[in-house]
Structure formats: C-alpha cells, structure tokens
Image (cartoon, rainbow, N blue to C red; front, side, top):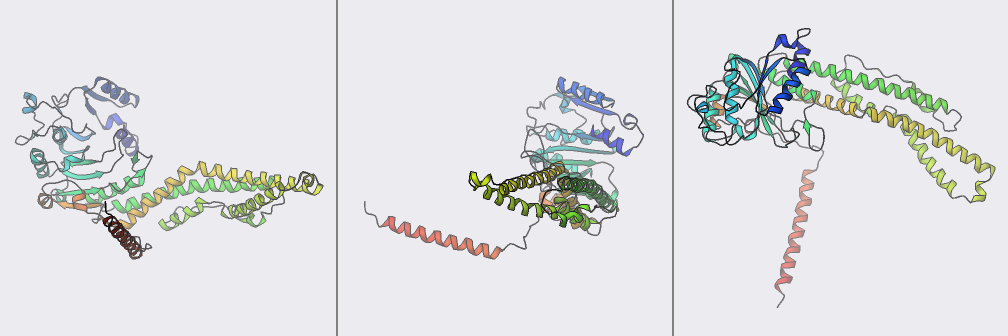
Length: 460
C-alpha cells in the first residue's frame, strides 16, 4: 500500500499498475485473503500465493525483482532443513547457505538477496540478533558482505511494533551500488531518534524520515541531498506556521468580538486592544531561527491579554471572597447588590475569554506539537551537516569499509561503529553535584561505622 502511495506522489499521472507488478507469499490462508482484499480495495494488481516460503518459491522470482520489501517473522523455529527442497534451494548460497541455528532469520535474508536482479534493491526488518549472530550465520553474513550488496543497516529502538516492544534492524541491500560504494556500508544508529506516540508506541516523524533519507541520499552520491532536505524542512515549517498563524489570528478576532459584546463591563482591556488587532503574517522565506522564534508566539498568541486576564482573575477571586464574607443583611444593600452584578459580569467576561483561548489551544494542540517537532528535526539536520555535506556523526551514522567490518568479526550492528555521543548540560553544576554526593556518602559511611560499633558492643 505504501508503495502505491509513493508511486502516486512521485509518478504523477502514471497508474500504479503501469509502474509495478506485486508478488507475495503468505502461509496463513486468512492472511493471504486479507492481502488480496487489501490490494483490490486500493486498486493494485498483485499475485499473493498461499505457500510456505521455506519450502517453495511459488513465483520463481530468483533474479527477477527490482525491489523487495518484507517484514518476515523473526526467529522462526523448527524449519525442516532435511527436506530436499531446503537442501537444494537455489535461493541459498551454495557453500554456506543452510544455517545450523534453529531459526529462519538467515534463510529469509538469503531469499531476499537472491530475488533481486542485477540492479535490485531490498529493504526488510530483521531481529536485532541477526547482525551479530555467530557460527554458520556469521559465515552467511560474511558471504553476503563480500558480495558488496549490503548497502545500509539501521538500528531501530524499542516500541515500534504494536504487539512487541523489542528493538530491531532494518537491512538495505543494493546489487546496483555505485562503484565507490561497492566496498562500503552505511551504518545508522536510530535508536535515539524517535517520536513518542503513546506510552507503548514510538514512530518517526516526517522530518526524521527526511533526515534519514538525506543521509542515505548523500551516501549514495547525491551531492544536493542534504541541501534539498533543508529546503523541504523550510517549506514544511513555513506551511505549518502559516496554518497556525491563521488560527491565531482567528483567536484574536474572537477575543475582540467577546470584548465588544461585553463593552458595558467595567474591566479595562484598552491596553491590549492594539495587540489583539494585530494580524500576524508568515513570510514564505523564513529561515530556521525565525521559525523557531515563532514557537513562543504560537504557545501564547494573546500574551498581553492573558496577562491582564490573570490579574483580573486574581482580583475577582479576592472580591468574591470579600462578598462571601458579608452578612445576609449587608448583601441586600443597594451598593452590594450592584457590586454582585458587577462581579457576575466580570466572571462571565473572563469565562468567555478563557473558553475561547482553551478551545484554540485544544484545537491546535496536535498542530503545535507537530510544528515543534518539525522545527526540531530541521535543527538536527542543520546541526549535524552545517555545510550540507555528509560527514560521519558520532552516535548517529558512519560509512564503514569492508576491511573495518572484517576487523569487527563481520558484525553489522551500527552501534559498534558509530559510537555514542555524550550530551553535556553546560548549565548543570556537575562538580557541585559530585561534592554533594560525596558528602552524603561520607555521612552514610560514618553512620554505618557508628552502627557497627554499637552492635559490636552488645553482649548477648
């Protein structure tokens, strides 16, 4: 389905079925039917076979595929490797193709590799253990690395699956790599890059995906990949800012109407009328800093009004308490009756303004969060690649050659190569905090010594 959306976005008027032919294989009958129905609903032609991929190749796809995408089941056990089909499977490497480990991970990996044509690319999710697996699996991984087809490995953190919280890796293979990358692999450690959706689910924001795409594009030789992505960040940030600005202007207009409808109220808001009358506008050419500065304005689009409302609200609460403290007789006086009507009018006006602001904040809660995320993703790209050229970033990405991989026992775990970055808070008093901890430890040690001495003196 995502391929169909991608083609629709990038191929213009060309129909999906004119661009691709889909093939798939599914063990469970119900899942296969669901897959066929899903394709039909989206108008995509495809051939989904009901078969066991370990014991058959129903579409005879060896060397035929331009692209392979898969999310195979991890660590499948009890694959019968004594079957003649498995022993003679042409989708496996001749000399090291059958792993001894009781899981199907490296069977899947070999299938995907052998399905590709000479220019084919594959992208698939795999269990994290596969990048460092030893024995026969290591031999298969070494063989795969020596083909030069391993293009990129991305480490993904926890909570990216609805049913499991385990981390994983995304493997990218490319049989048509450019000559300069034939002996190189891009390692990306994305475990610390994510967007929190719920307590149990994370995902990647559109900006984070753009950044990964820029890194991949630059590695593959696109000299303008990072600069183009900065332009996309700028365009997205401006479009989002303009949409939020429209809503902020509408809030100001609403507040003006509320104040006009309550013009008889004695609360004086004349000092903020000019600010409410201001119509914000966002230019199409704003840079990062200008977009970042807008966040504060978006968080409180009627800042002066809010400050004055807070002061009046505090005064109202005080006046209400004073009114409540009056005796029944005093409350019936003409002066205090007028005072009560005035308090009610003040309360009604302030409640109307607060309701308008609250409705605005609730309506834009998600939009503002997305805008902050977008601006932050833009900042990340600018910070990592200030000159719009790829460079290895500690803790994020590194291009390694085959010799370095061999020196690391043919491991394909990104964290082993990219290292980790230490985030230092310049405003935190580390020395003072360490002194405090040492003092607390010394105090506890002294108390322990005193307690030990007291116990030692007890004669039973």
